[in-house]
Amino acid sequence: NAGVTQTPKFRVLKTGQSMTLLCAQDMNHEYMYWYRQDPGMGLRLIHYSVGEGTTAKGEVPDGYNVSRLKKQNFLLGLESAAPSQTSVYFCASSYLTGTSGRAGEQFFGPGTRLTVL
Amino acid sequence: GQSLEQPSEVTAVEGAIVQINCTYQTSGFYGLSWYQQHDGGAPTFLSYNALDGLEETGRFSSFLSRSDSYGYLLLQELQMKDSASYFCAVRVEGGSTLGRLYFGRGTQLTVWP
Image (cartoon, rainbow over all chains, first blue to last red; front, side, top):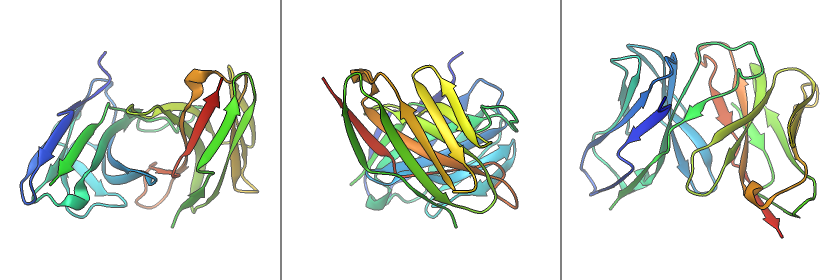
């Protein structure tokens, strides 16, 4: 199993350009998440999805849109990139519920390093 | 809202024991997770506590006190490869939160030879 994969690994954009980050998981997880990580800020949730066709806003959703058309894929879009969106973006997935010791477990992809000039 | 506090940096020598504390203020608390992240890598899950007490997994242990809104990660027999960032994260339930995690800002652990 590949786990969680992200495409692309690196990208440089100019201000105002658009792009889509792709996340795929092969673990049949219901939940999927998009985070951004900035130095000293930890991981902040952008959007998440609790199932195919559903999405919800996280802590920092402005400037981003998402879609979950298939259970295994979660797309993050930047319609008009800004320098403030320079960051490392992580996708993660998890089981629907958990009552065991792994209820707080999320599986992370390798990340996408995005620079907006 | 949710807030988590953990030290920004901790240093220790190989073979030593180190404790990374995490205090939280949150509504709808369900459990406390710990993640490890090496430079340039992805966060990886270490442990999860939903009940008070100590959970042990090899050299790592995690503790939770729900009444004190406090937990810690204990790393024993430190090795150089343990140098990484460690994040605590609270799992919350209820309303529109639906099992999401809120992460602290991370503790950078440096292990010296």
